[in-house]
Length: 158
Image (cartoon, rainbow, N blue to C red; front, side):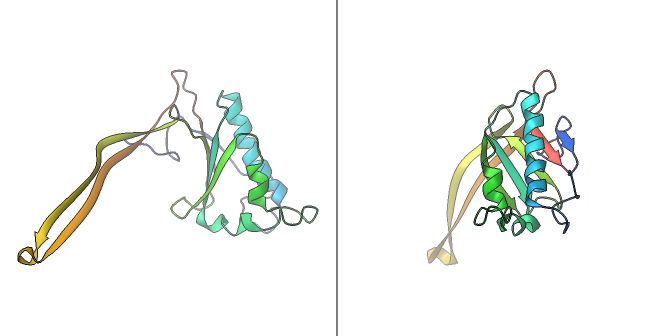
């Protein structure tokens, strides 16, 4: 079985905090910040100290671009999340499941890439040699890891 970040059996999971998921009208910038901060705090207790990468579903792209608070005009929710110690990257991914946020330590001991075949370019003649067609391919598989003590550097908020 090839596991991903969201379905690895050793991943850490938790729910959204105050006011539900980020699509809820009542959810504030502070609530969103605290959801990510909780995930990072759990990873730190598991001895994963960063750098962290947070992946948000596509629907949350506009949500994190609004002001964090009226007290901090010009500072978006995304800006505030990026100020969490160790937070290296915040990505909006349209293939991330709805209302699911993944926070993980972006190091090789948490997620590695197995290269089955390096990048290859193949070309062949078509139309009797009057044109050339080309393809580029590679075989790469993510390898999501856990420690021998079953600690994972992944936290999924659902």
